Image 1 (spheres, rainbow, N blue to C red):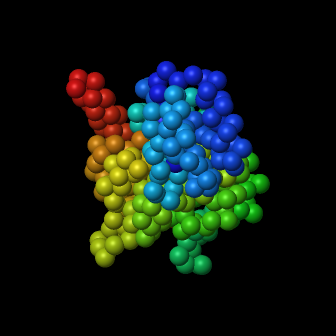
Image 2: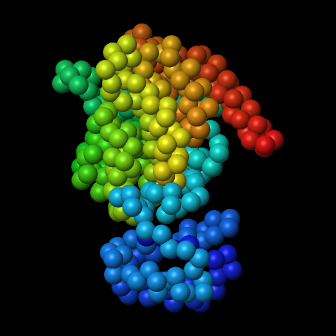
Image 3: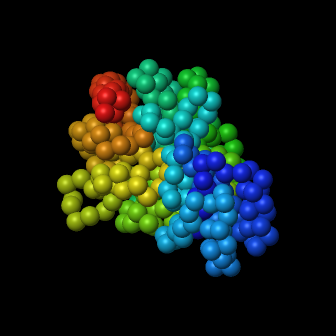
Length: 340
């Protein structure tokens, strides 16, 4: 349930309303917009007499939210959420954020070189896999805790905040110094992990599952927010369809749909969506045009010899050229919006 307050509402009356709701076991989450303040009510709202709230002078309207996700719902929080990753680095709010780096951390030389190159091209967050979920048990599984140490070393050299994937809640102590934790597609519905992530104060990059609906993705985000952590970024990374030419099928419609349903930032992973480096650039441009808040792109200094997903990785030079085009498109879209 949400309560929409009048623009000139009395603060003392508001305090009395919140106290009354709290006494009934209802948690109240205020969201202040340019025109109205919205109160999101979480709990058993069946005990609330809507007519009593509507009778208050400070209340303009009361609406029950039918969707099962409450905290992540845009009705609950009309303004876009901006997630701060580190000082001066944010995702959301109208700016295009580029996250780049190799699929897997392979060596100190490799990760540090790639980090420096993508930073020079305009990336503000570095990605790199330390723990790798692989279909085959015989494939490279990542350097694990050593991989995180190397990521931290690259951050020390470049100043770029880092995002890397967690596989299990028991690994959380290893992620204490990581700036942003990624939940991969295979773990999107690992609810025990999501609960643990809801209890920490750290940004979470939540990737859409291979066959997940929009609602299922949002319900996974709801698990994290229900635990108290609202620093969530959603990632569309392609879904499994009958098409076999590409690794997955990038669902461009997910961007405007999610922007309608939720206030959380939405980024796109064109690398995993296609599995083909030649398709990363056009799908990146399409994603930005569709309203994505950012992109997470795989970049490797020697894709041919990469230990993981070299076929979908851009070279640093190719990433640099793409980044220039993306920032030009961002400026064009901003100027077009300003001239409307």
